[in-house]
Image 1 (cartoon, one colour):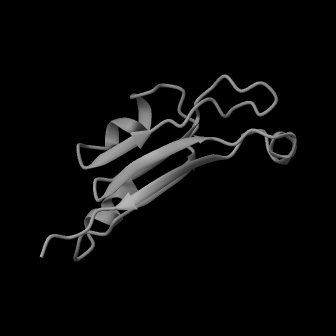
Image 2 (image 1 turned 90 degrees about the vertical axis):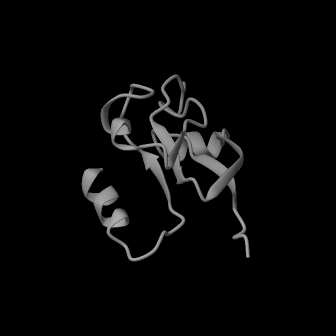
Length: 100
């Protein structure tokens, strides 16, 4: 995670960024999530693991502060429970408009 964040931090300009997926982190604020400062929003859409009986929030959406998180959730269906051991997570984001 440090490598990814260092790469993003070394860019010439601010880039609206979204990272999402299975972070394999059981703690809500521990582990790799300690690497994210105030310029990031760490969102836990809901229990997504294990797909057959989701109890753990291992899948996250992490967005830079240029985004507003409008909604998020976990997609639950018979097909999604067969497709992976994780249910898919989703988020509806809106990019902040730059002030002129």
